[in-house]
Image 1 (cartoon, rainbow, N blue to C red):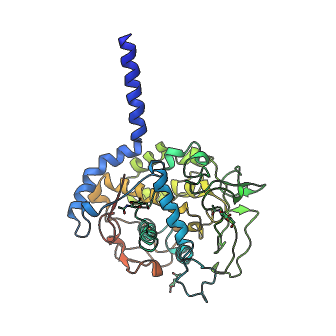
Image 2: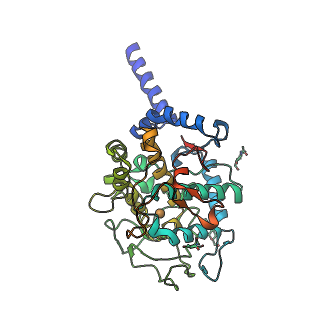
Length: 369
Ligand SMILES: *[C@@H]1O[C@H](CO)[C@@H](O)[C@H](O)[C@H]1NC(C)=O
Ligand SMILES: *[C@@H]1O[C@H](CO)[C@@H](O)[C@H](O)[C@H]1NC(C)=O
Ligand SMILES: *[C@@H]1O[C@H](CO)[C@@H](O)[C@H](O)[C@H]1NC(C)=O
Ligand SMILES: [Cu+2]
């Protein structure tokens, strides 16, 4: 009798523990690298522990925290663009400025030596705009792919409630190019972003029927349309499970293999492409215009967290290393740590790649929960 009671109480306390701390094999790898990251922070001349911002997983945010983030994103989508309207007439909002900058540099920031550092700086610049231009006092949340891999559609990120990043698209007859058609394909109909207008692109749409063609060949023309998604678990349940993330981190012995495995988009899909095409639709599935879907930044925060965990497994050897060229097509030669990352209107400073490799040096002062 007493034994049963004890077992029941142990079971209950384990349940309670599970409820307060979501931990998995990826978080364990974070824990293993934590001492090295703490030591790096102590060496920083720009970042101190009391200034450190902590990025959290969407599922661990309170409803109020999620709403504060959503409100800030909606604010960025309602503020005017700062770009030259003769060159970028489709950039109507400050949110669009980010999309335009990504479109503009797409061929020199993917499959290149600056892929990780560029997207780290870009995601950080977005977080800064939310905070500095839209009164947000929280941080950029991330999407732990593994946590929701079995069913992203019902995750708190995509369940379509008013505390989500909006749900799936309306179910229409369609084809998604990177996975079998899921239950969406049409305009999103639920959640805070259901009225959002996508203005730029498309350039490389990955869904049929395709979105309307942009009036400018460079994709910078004004092309207002709805946000479409085709969220499904086809890719997530195969390529972005917790074990896939663990394997990526553990089996990549150098930066080249880490980057290439992460960015693979062929038979074996890496977590980068799988995340984008788990959302799919327009513009999430468009290589150039993907930041036009606000879930982009949750995905890229997780890319950044995964890179950080990989670095932290052997930090001193894995910080000042890059691999790859300066453009996807090979022009420009091999990338160097001294190359500059330029976000133009999104951030006032250009930083060298070498200054963007640590989350507590250069412009950065954040960590992951
Ligand atoms: C696009 O890149 C060019 C340099 O190649 C730069 O002059 C221009 O300002 C950039 N546009 C945006 C929107 O970042
Ligand atoms: C941050 O914002 C939230 C929601 O707007 C507010 O409740 C909270 O008091 C703010 N915290 C600080 C430290 O300003
Ligand atoms: C979307 O727009 C409609 C019509 O303007 C409005 O009634 C509704 O509240 C908006 N919904 C959201 C989630 O912004
Ligand atoms: Cu990108």
